[in-house]
Amino acid sequence: MAGLAQIGAKHVAKGVGRFTEMVMTEGKGSYIKTECGRNILDLTCGIGVTNLGHCHPGVTKAAQEQVGTLVHGQVNLGYNKPYLQLIEQLLPVMPHKSLDSFFLWNSGAEAVEAAVKLARHATGKQNIIVVQGSYHGRTFGTMALTKSKTIYGAGYAPLMPGVFTTPYPYWHQMGLPHTTSNDELVENALYRLELLLKQETAPRDTAAILIEPVLGEGGYIPAPKGYLEGLRKICDDHGLLLIIDEVQTGFGRTGKNFAIEHYPTVQPDVMIVAKGIANGFPLSGICSRKELMDKQPAGSQGGTYGGNAVACAAGVAVQRAFKEEKILENVEERSKELFGMLRGLQGDATVGDTIAEVRGLGLMVGIEFKSPTDPYTPAKGKVPAKMASRVQNKCLEKDLLTLTTSIYETIRFIPPLNISKEDMAKACSIIKESIEEVVR
Ligand code: PMP
Image (spheres, rainbow, N blue to C red):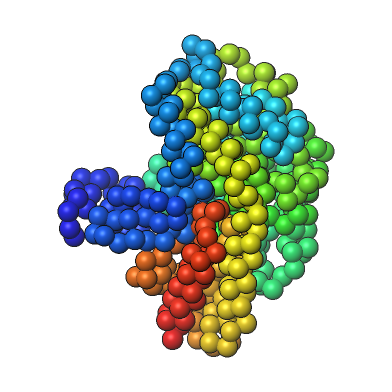
């Protein structure tokens, strides 16, 4: 291990967890440079954050200007100007006009907690329902809401009480073969939720259902349309709020400003945003109806740094870039190329049999491999063990950074939304070669 990485190995808390020991020194567009001189094509965007690429010129310029103007305009003292400018930009792109009141915070997990606080206060009820496989963060409150891997909560109990889990319409979690139709999965999952409300948490005690429109850490699984529609109906029938966590899916990631736009009849009561909102600056928030938000007494939400002026100025520049740089058009084109390559592999004589599913929306794309120990994804031939991490390591050897996700054999691809055609072609050929090399 060379240079500064030694300090990392000795002095950085193990609890953080790292895929590599590389020291990142520079980021430009779709590439990251390391201390050892590697130039790595980044298909992670720092877990869906630098959606416009590293050091996007417009965002960098806006942040630099703001640093020289006002860094900390504390929100309990008044408004800082970029905070208001950002809301002005966001209002017209909200998926529903009803989402007209905002609270800005720092991280995704904090915003999730803010949404739970809002739901409890506004409804006067305490229980929250989440889906199996969900990820909402690692703070004390959000550990209780996260159901993707036990590592996030194990050993930290007692966690926040009042959290109930319902199965997600995904074959592994329903205990059904992976060929089960979406309609059947949806019907079963909604039935299980109705049972939960009858047997474990009564509607009169339940404040909200909290869900990611595309399960992120749980495996990059878009919610079937019928499922979200069913949740909306159950919420309406029983007086629950529907909280949509767009932390990873928001700001163009799925090909629309917000993933919930893929479900036009599903209106969220509360929406949570973070990550891509400011392209790398710590900023998050919740938005809801003013009538709901105003039920909370002044001073009961917030803290010192929330809605930082520099982060908000970066957020304004992100919105400007979306208007000026045809980002969503690029997502559509590059998404077709990435899905085209992966679906082509599914039909390939050598590697096709190792792939259980290719799924996602826009540039939030996952590939789940079969596993020799998994009864739900039987293969005709022999499938290597631990495909996901082996393919991920092969990609990295070829200077392509990817992420795995979920407890199953899944790799996720989160490229910059403005990645060029050439870089997408390069990424596609590295992914294909890496899978072929692992299978061979
Ligand atoms: N919700 C979702 C859907 C996420 O993907 C994440 C982060 N991966 C979070 C919440 C938590 O965000 P943060 O890491 O900023 O606390």
